[in-house]
Image (tube, rainbow, N blue to C red; front, top):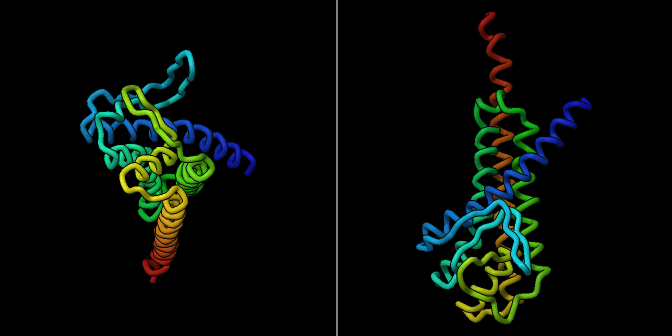
Length: 202
């Protein structure tokens, strides 16, 4: 039991590190897909004024407000793909191979450690009056999303925060439903496997 807990903790730490980098790679892939060929991912970069560990750098001036919103959503979109894969594995026969604790860890870390963390960060940070644009830029995701959305639509910061909260709640509800479906399907498959030897013996 103790070793199982230690193993899950070590897996959670390793997965969190991988998720953070996968998140940043997501930004880079989306930025390149939307037309910024200069977008790139770096494991570490330091300048005279700041440092960055695992970050996406791109030229936000090359992209429209809507494209910049999508780029800054890209990291969370990529991590939620990992959650979706974990849910599908949990619901499939592969769940007998991959420990359920690891699948639960992936789902919880990608939801709580990325989506909810990013939303909280966006809500806690004041939307800047002027967000700099240009090459080699890296932003706080949801703060940048709200600024670009404000610049594009003229909506107030309070309205954008409300939209952010409602969107996060709706997505969290859909995620919970997907997890419920996977758990239900997994239990149903387990019952069928238990019944097969009894049916074969008749």
